Image (cartoon, rainbow, N blue to C red; front, side, top):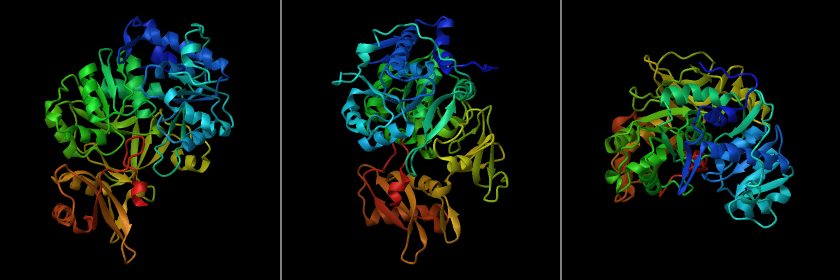
Length: 512
């Protein structure tokens, strides 16, 4: 069993140890026509660390990384860790006011940004109270330190910061579906803990794997599956910075022949519904990972029928770093999220805090040594979520007699219809089985009598004409399969559903 020593830096565990194991010449990163070995990444991360120190970042300082999925992401990520600074990461496709918020909230001393957002960052820089420098990757930007000018000239030797396993290493941002994202503060030991239990025991990463990801690297789900986890075993990470459309994913699978694909249900749906899906060769995949939102069993079955590769559906969170409940290879129960990952405990409690019996739905509490410390600058919210060893999620679950966990939605998403709670997830799953429904989201609305009723936003399949006739047909379909009070009283056909930058349905936009 891997023991994390007191003096510890996770960059050593995920990167430098590969050299000591003799895999320095192994390809670590593939991107278009550029390959980086593990030795290349070690050397470049050391140079980046020296440059960051020169630019004003030091131990415990936050560094904001705003890069697409390009090779520089890895040496920047590990370079920040090596100097004892704290990684914070953001989406390189946000509006200016979001970057102003993140720079001031993180109090980042240095931001490493891509050329595509240089002008946006320059526009908010006068409002960034703590920022000392911007380091630009890609084309030079007038007056700003340039990655390609400074990093190649920096020294290869880097004095590693004297960090402990309980030093802060990284902030992972919450989904932000109910307001501004908050940073969950994580220690150096959190990430190897989940790697040893989930990545190595459940997904069974090996040095022979090639990984590819639909979600982008700034999202902790992908930071794990497409950077940390493959690096921990000397595997190869395939990166691309184009938008992750189904066409692009199919193209990259042909190009890189990955064995592990990190995915989300929304894109799984788009891939199986692609007009050329049946002609795609996904035979290189030994497993597809799914998380971030509920994966309907109907969608799972369609994927398996088309592409054969197993889907391991699981649930994780920024609060716990990564996945703590998951299906397993050879043990998948469609519709469920599987069983507890080794090293984690869970209990389901009712509104009075009493533990639920099998089959009863309640709020999920989870425990494991990858749990974060707190939300930065959110003391009251932290106390509500982090209680000793336990993390109190806002997810509703039930567990069956065999130990499989079933997702029932979020606490705030439950609808009380006629005095009875209704899970939008259950209604959505029923809607998705209708032949005319491509995507669906169910929220509550207030009728003319002031009562809450379900409303469904539906994206129709190509060739199906939205209108009153189809809406009535869809409603009758649900009535025939669920209790009468659960059917959506209103159906609104839309071209697409709003999504967060992590690919989840943005319910707060549907409720407004």
